[in-house]
Length: 153
Image 1 (cartoon, rainbow, N blue to C red):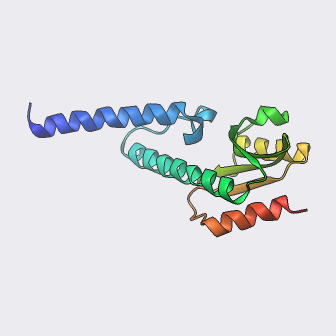
Image 2 (cartoon, helix red, strand yellow):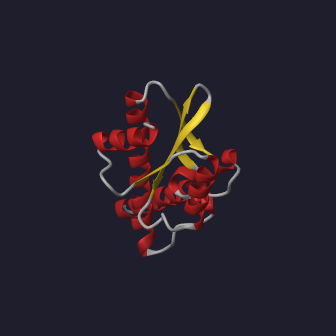
Image 3 (cartoon, rainbow, N blue to C red):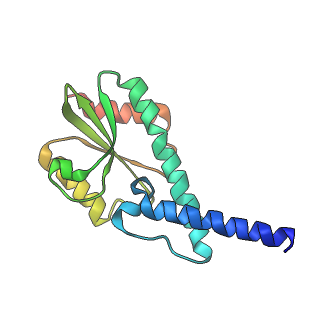
């Protein structure tokens, strides 16, 4: 077995591990049971979802640093608001009360039933629903401005 054969097998294994992680991870889109496609497009899908997950992770320090009066909770199930749908990426709590939810969605995911269910549950509970798109820059000042705008009466 040559060097390239071993490299090819290693790449296949890593790719399989990534696919498994994407399918099982709620933060990478696996919560709705949708599996990434196989074949040539699958690598692009995996890379896109991993990039989106990285973008989501960038929100935690921004929220924590700029909203010290709030407790930040990651991955809030919609069922906690009595609904069904995509989990919220972040919940902002003050004195034990949920004050706002943040959801970071991928490209063209804001029209899915899961997204709409999450949005409706927040609306029904009277909780501000703040959405961001994972494929957009979401620079620090922009995120702070948007969140502050929803938290300020």
